[in-house]
Image (cartoon, rainbow over all chains, first blue to last red; front, side, top):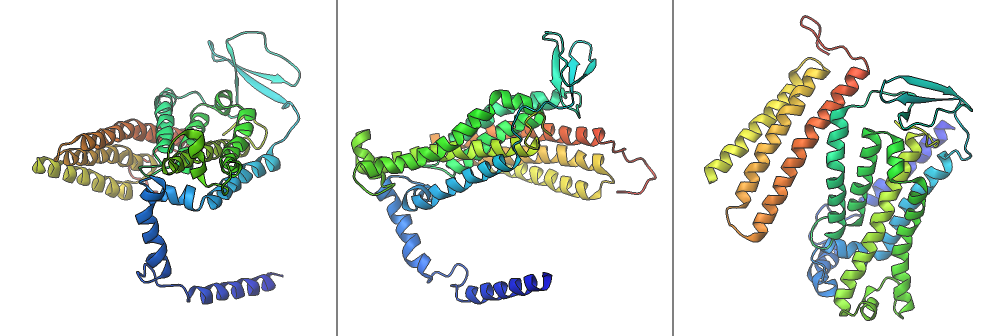
Length: 275
Length: 107
């Protein structure tokens, strides 16, 4: 079996190398891509879409279909992690640990028992380590600014490097940083599982919905110039606004997928305690 | 102005180089984190400060904004880098890694 696999791999690799020999040379100025496509996008992006950063206009407008399905792929990755790992049903663990904050005494409870109603007890993980003031304070200081920067990157995808994917990753990373520096329970309080699971498809739907709106207004799917009549701007500015709407959808989808995957993998689908 | 920028950039470069050599030369985990945490932070701060000053040579509102953004990066690095180093050292201590003492083999 292994030998058959090896033969198939070698044949596929040989085909790939054979096909790659036909490619134009690296950075060849006479290749079709550099003679027609790239100059067109560089010269006409501003004229067509009024977006100075032509990477963004290329990504979200000229080949908007591709980016829409990229977003769908990301959503699918999160969904698959959820379906494979999440253990549903409120099965309580055999023992759970609580810590009395004032005295530092740890209480281990067997299944079915309860602690007295008091603010002084906090639920802790099995592998609990004492809270570190420097890490917690440092992260608490940074997280709001990281999130602000994430929003900035999403909103400035038009005129500077950035966009929905990058901004979404930064926003998701800020919540993951919270989960690492504090614990998973704190992060889940800020971003509940249901919110994540609802926001993720909403992000994809914003993208597809923008395209469908264009379809309803009587032009092609994802042809944002149709939004001009809704937004009361000229068609070229409408393309710029359409790209922005799409970027917001991408940002939401990427952010929630990051958090979703982290939550499911770090807690092995149980959501009771993280790393 | 040019001289000041050059001094800042070269001292930043010096600290970054010294930090890289330190990471390679120091004998164990904790002492290796020492140049990684301190010298890299200082080197980055000096180099970025030099860039922010260089950017202000032809003064305009756009250049001022770019320099302000570089200053924000400096503040971020100043907070984030020592915190990250502390977290790594903390993880090492909790995992039970004993510090290197004189006479032992380097690891």
